[in-house]
Length: 295
Picture 1 (cartoon, rainbow, N blue to C red):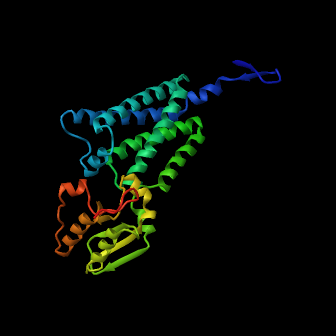
Picture 2: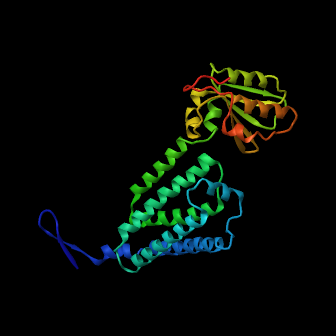
């Protein structure tokens, strides 16, 4: 029996049930089980990667991996270490020790925040998902939520929901550009959806627009430059015109009237030309606020 005193100086008895209620919570045993499952899943990816193999064979896995600073085996190894430590701490707490509970909560909150951002980037920005990442996220989120539920740290869930809401309200996608479009040109039976970012005082933009008026098959949205500043800044694009090509979910960004007109002329012959590399690196026919329009 533990004895303590309140602010009036009267003794307060704290029974063993108070501390054991958290230690014997079956949720910690479930967290430990999920953690070790996640550990073996990530460990399998690390082992397979050593022989050039992987658990994930989808194309989206490679695309998502290209956005990361670390390779998939390194990320899998870090995740395996996380799950192993979380599993040991959860098992220890379930068996009767409260030492490490605070660190376990910190780990769960951090992991939930990281997964919220990673998944938000995939769904809101990249518009694709990696099966391997989703599986790891399932282990992380389920075990993390159970830890917060067992310890009643509901305030942390509010912070996580805030992260998700912030990502959903500020996507780096072309969806806001579609909504910001002021005009649409639609004729014939086009195979591609186009978005042209332009400026009124840009002669190169009007050159592209004039050519678009001659196309018999076209689905073109016109978006003013001032409505696309966030998109341009995220891709470090300084000038207009910019043409975004959406072909069966795959998007391409073309900058400069020379490159854009080369692509549009290819549409008239149903051939999509591959632009020269130097045109992609140094686009011609652009207007920006920091320099005069190029000839």
